[in-house]
Image 1: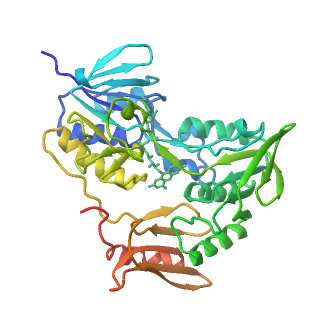
Image 2: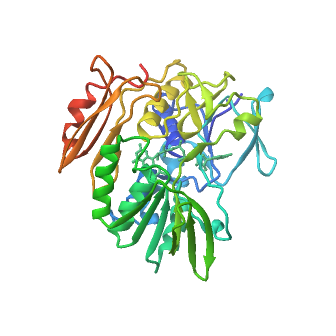
Image 3: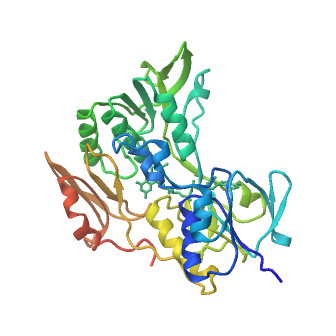
Length: 384
Ligand SMILES: Cc1cc2nc3c(=O)[nH]c(=O)nc-3n(C[C@H](O)[C@H](O)[C@H](O)COP(=O)(O)OP(=O)(O)OC[C@H]3O[C@@H](n4cnc5c(N)ncnc54)[C@H](O)[C@@H]3O)c2cc1C
C-alpha cells in the first residue's frame, strides 16, 4: 500500500527548512510541497539590501522548484493554492477542486502585509514587498524613477530606506511613532539610528501618519495627518505583517494572532502542524529566520517519529542598515524592567534589565555592536 505523503503548504523558508531537515531523517516517506507562488527557494532577507549588494530579483533566486524537488527528493507543485482542509478525511482541497490526502500536514503559510485604510485614488498604487514576486514588481516600478516614500519606520522600512538611499533614490519615511524602530529601540537608540540614516540622505516624518494618497499624472500625492503634503514616484508600505490564519480558522483549528500551536508545533489537530510567520508558538509570533530554523528542526524530528519540542535560545536580530550597524534583542512584551542607556558619538548601548540587574534584552548601535556576542551570552533563552 502506498504511503500518504507529508504535505507542506508553503515554499518559504519555513516550508523548505522542514522538508530539508525531514529528508535528513527520513529518506523514504513521500513529501509534497504545495505553494501559491513559483515554489523556488530564495533568501527573503536579501530583498531589503539587494540594491546595495548588487542583486537583481533573478539573482536572488537560489534554485527553482524543479531543482529543489531534485535536490530534496520531494514533489513540489507551484501555483497550487490550498483552499480548504477537510480534517475528517485528512484531505486538502485545491483551487480547481482537486483533492489530495495527507498523513501529516504542515502549515507554513507566511503572513500578509498589512494595508493601511487610506483615502484617495492612489492607494491602489501603493506597493509592499513580502516576497520575490512583490520585489520584482517593486524593481520594475523603480526603473527610471527618483523618489520613494516609505510608510513605516520599522525594521523593513528602515532597511529599504537605507538600501534605496545607497542606490541614489530620494527617500522619505513616514511613521506615527516618534523614533524609528520604535518597537525595538529605546528613544536614544532610535534618535541615533535616525541621525545616521538622515546623514545617508533619508528624510523622516515622524509622529504623524498618512491620510490620503492621490494620483497626479504619473506621480502620487500624499497628505499627512500633520497637514504636510508631498509628491513622489512610488509609495512603499512597510507597516507590518499579519499571520495567514484564514485557512486554519475555516477548518476549525484554533487561531489567535497566528495559528495556535504548542511547543510541539502541533495544532489542536494531532495531524496538523504550523510554523514560521503564520504560527503562534506557545503564545508568541516570532517572524524571523532564527526561530524558523529552530522550529523546523524540532518539527522534522517529530514528523520523523521522535516527538520534539521547539527550543529557542536568545536570537538577536541584525538590522541591515549599513549606515548604522544595529543589533536588537527586544525583551518579552510583558517583561518587567527598564532600559539603561550609554551613548556617545559613535554608538548606543541600551540594556534592558530587571531590578536585580539581569539582562532581559538589548539594543546595540554603531560601535556598541562589537559587544553583541559577550552580551548575547548573558541573555535568557526565549523558550527553554
Ligand atoms: C524584506 C524582508 C526582509 C527581512 N529580513 C530579515 C532579516 O534580516 N532577518 C530575519 O531574521 N528575518 C527577516 N525577515 C523575516 C523573514 O524573512 C521571514 O520571517 C521568513 O522568510 C518567513 O518565512 P515563512 O516560510 O514563514 O513565510 P513565507 O516566506 O511568506 O512563505 C509562505 C509560503 O506560503 C505559501 N502560501 C500561502 N498561502 C497558501 C495557500 N493557501 N496555499 C498554498 N501555498 C500558500 C506562499 O506562496 C509562500 O510560499 C525579513 C522579511 C522581509 C519581508
